[in-house]
Length: 209
Ligand code: BEZ
Image (cartoon, rainbow, N blue to C red):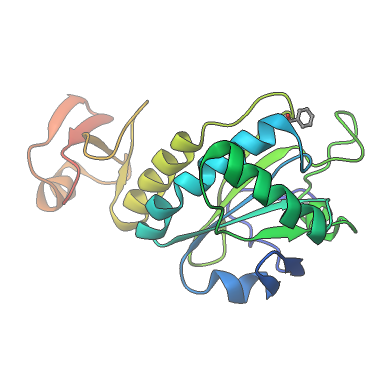
């Protein structure tokens, strides 16, 4: 069954490059990103996992744990990490799940047989501290993802989890936000300063500190 935003992220136990994990225990009380790649020792995936490694401190600062998955075996992951580190000038420190029996890939509907029946597509799941799925992305094997966008999305998700705000098109951390329509003007005036009302339904305010 496919997963939808708001569903609980399915739990699983799996072997990873950092040992065996229970996914929910591994997530703990923080945020998580589970992302799949089609296969080890492939060019686009090599650049993606290397770039994610360079962003890992940014995710850690936001209390987000990162974990990758593909249907390759553990020894393949370990060998390939050396190549990623060498070619992308980084050190991969986040775990990679070995999923040769496709347990995780099936739970998260990561194999799209009409695209390829053997490899996972490029999926991303952002999971909140409540273990609910907050965001899903699916890219084809031929297109590397924009991991800066995933960091941007985490900033938006964490902001909107705390405040009755949404974020407009192409929003970046520090820019003005939108007051959600369910908040009345009177309540908005109590909650936020410098409200700019463009239309009754389109009200901006500065990002709270
Ligand atoms: C790649 O990572 O380069 C890739 C993987 C599977 C299919 C096509 C490209």
